[in-house]
Image (cartoon, rainbow, N blue to C red; front, side):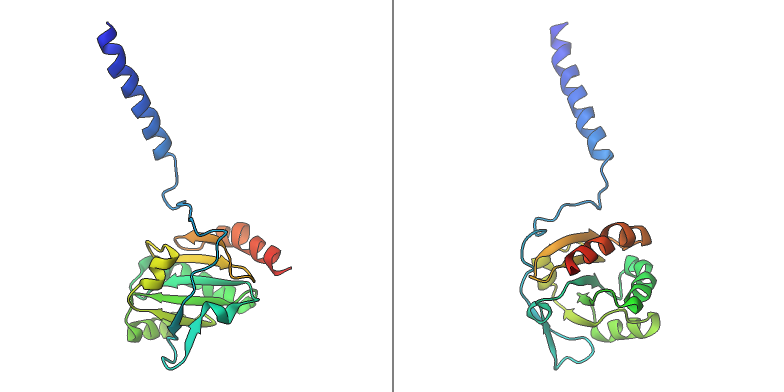
Length: 174
């Protein structure tokens, strides 16, 4: 009888861990960068490769960094919301065009609208790695001191914009 209790106990513990894991949202991956300075970078701009953009350019401003690509299906899902939101002028949205071809990215923005104050080109994905990007789209809220205050993984939804992003931006903008 005792020789069945140990395997039974291990089975119950394993089922418990599995049940907890299945009830978690896989998009809710906590970022170790939240509460830390945004990685410093300088990259060429998509619209004009002779101009550059770096995190230092946004010092003193609350801003969003939206990681996107023309090949990203989920980016197309969130894009109309970003275009609409950008028209309000609430906060600057900087695009980080991730592992994309410049011509494809420009064509995509011309076709679907450009919500970005500007887009920086991360052709080799190194800046994305520094930010901990593991899939696009991802959006970061960065405060006036250059600290990452929120990482939103996946497409922004009207609900996430209203309940998470906008209240945080309003608080940080005071």
